[in-house]
Image (cartoon, rainbow, N blue to C red):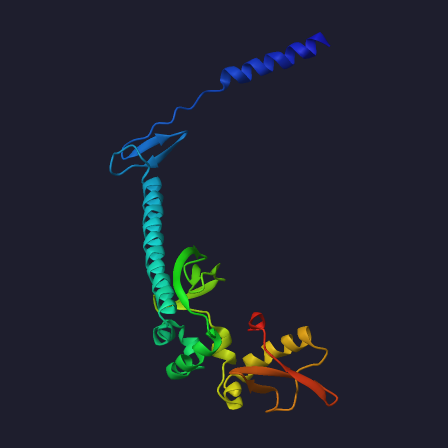
Length: 242
């Protein structure tokens, strides 16, 4: 047994003696980093790969800061337009996918109908959230002339052709109306919104007979929830807008 142990120890010692430490040598333009070589063309003792990554990060940070500044200016403009009742300027900020459902004149006419009698003393940008390169959200501190103050809900903006465009006011765009015929400009979008609204607010489904699903009431396309000869018009809920 002792002989076996001795042989094992002997072999281990031989292996240790045979093991050699390999020294890594890096010739210019390479430098030693850890146990390997990396390229350093400009001889500043920093791996070129690390410099490239740092430059990319710096460039991205600068772009992000510039984009945030650009969006902040757009969001501040919107707050000023709302405060000063510049409905046409608000329309001009809308994303084109909204503008195709309402003309500028129609929006200018309908906006104050939804705004009601609220008169703003000030609409001040409170906060912005850059959700991505294409989506951003703004929040506002709103003060009314009666002294009441509140913080607005989320106002969404989307990028279009390099510019930040307003992606809110869907209820005016898709459900605002002068006459019932206005409700049929985007019937599929309104239908989806109304189907969910009827399901949530009543025991009746949306009417299925074409041309009788909606009714313009108080400048808003109401959903006609109807079954077995009974039903009622219900205001659509914008959260169901698809």
